[in-house]
Image 1 (cartoon, rainbow, N blue to C red):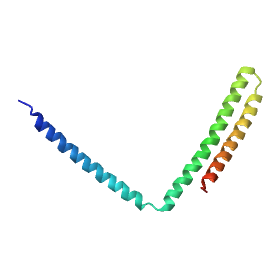
Image 2: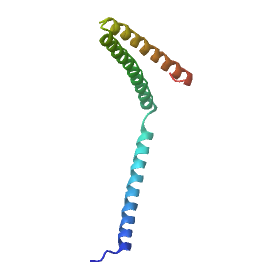
Image 3: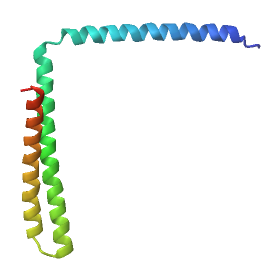
Length: 111
């Protein structure tokens, strides 16, 4: 059996053309579906994104503060004061992060 390289090349080109056509059709369907979405849906997505960002910023700050407080208590043996102090500082940092995010969005003209 001899393998003809030109025949293989032609088969590969045909498969590539078929794949390219399928990808273009999928892209056209996705573009059509995206254009059908209402502006309210994209506004909802922006609101959800902002809400999740605020939530994650606050929770991360509180967890980091609690972790540092626990480490301070572990190293110094001053239980529970390190945890209480740094948990409060973490909550304050979380609120500060939320405030900064709100200022940034206000500067961009978003609601």
